[in-house]
Length: 304
Length: 304
Figure 1 (cartoon, each protein chain N blue to C red):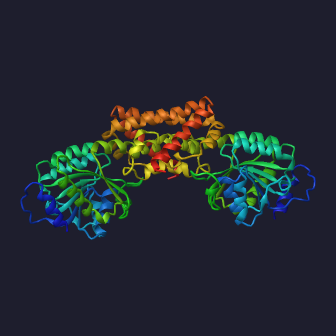
Figure 2 (figure 1 turned 90 degrees about the horizontal axis):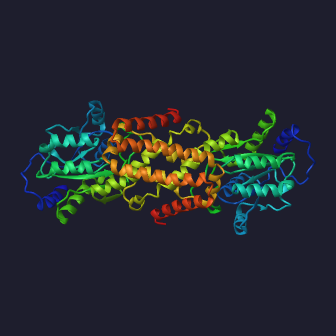
């Protein structure tokens, strides 16, 4: 089925040289962290052949015991139908730049990075004129823990997947390409695929994900955090769940989306200041109006 | 057992007139909202007799079908060993002021209000010189929904309960009194009892609960909230869970703890501004240091 889809996509794409090494359905994973490990486990359990590269060899060897079929060497890269870049933005771009000519004609490369403008701009440029496609991807799931040890096959089960297709494709080619990504990833079990632009993705993600991490991380810095035991319920636990985070990774993601995230932090600060002003003025009417408005907005976005 | 405990506590308390109407273990609940309803259900399931008062008679009649044994009339009040004030702060204080002389000698009155200074100051004063005790209580559980319809018997199962004993008791009397509250509430299934002062309670609760509600309610006010569908995962869901809230109730609670809450909002704004400044300056080192510090604090308070 993969071969058939492949042919259909390529029919309206560039003419490509034949590649006898190509193994339909085989997946190459670049980086065995929380994301890469979870993709590897899910795809392996779904019967796919999985080849992987990882900076730390020990993790690769661990994964090769029961999940990964082989190392993603220069010889293995051309055999993959799908390559998933699972490193930080800069590392993912660097790998693709270096390996671009080894990727098989007809293959698809996706990434899993939480920002899309920087990675799509560079990776679309790398793919340009080459006989394979890059599709920017952001699987909307994760945990506050990182690393292969925390990865699991059901990480993305029912989660939303956001896809950014390359520019300049006609409608049919684009739809076929996205359809093929969905089918290649079918063992992963995403609940929903959303197609968008890198610009819109980065705008919304600054709000839904990045701001949540900033707020949570800032929240626990109150001196009161030290004496909260016995005084906290679900709301505190929820607000501070993602306070624990991978600082170097989020630093890179935040700076790659600095304009949007800065704007969202500013909006939240301004809104918080309004509550503080109403409280300082002991203005019950103003405070209740602010709370009602937040309640109304939440109901609205929940579609109730 | 209740009679015996009762006698033990009262032994070191004031001399009391005999009250032939007193029914050991019987509970009076003032206000059948989310809190009152949940206490009523849990205590009823635990075999206690439950009498209740509610502003809206329809709710009381609904509760009397399967949970509440009778109306908490002027005749029923003197028969209760435990009275639980489950309304908003002002309503709870008002009820106690009006009914103070009907409460049985040897009884205990508690409340469930989320702030403790205002209610303890007033209710300790009302109890002063009367032959029963008031103990400030704050059960640390709830949901983003309010009203009897959302109440449930297991609402407080394993939740923390915070207690503020009256001032001026000797150690033995205080310990006996708190012990008796715990036993009277045993069917409710609290996981942990914490004893504190009203001042410390209000300081910590401004951070663990009130600030969480303010942040969540403010969070959804970004214009980006309207386009988040398909772009949000667990962190957004957690951050905005309590954005839906009972605006009049929280207005009263926030203003009763205005000094502490205002300070906590200010601290959070200042912290958020630091992230914004680092992002605006594209200062990766400063941003990573801020994120590491938040991660460290969270691990510290988690005791890891």
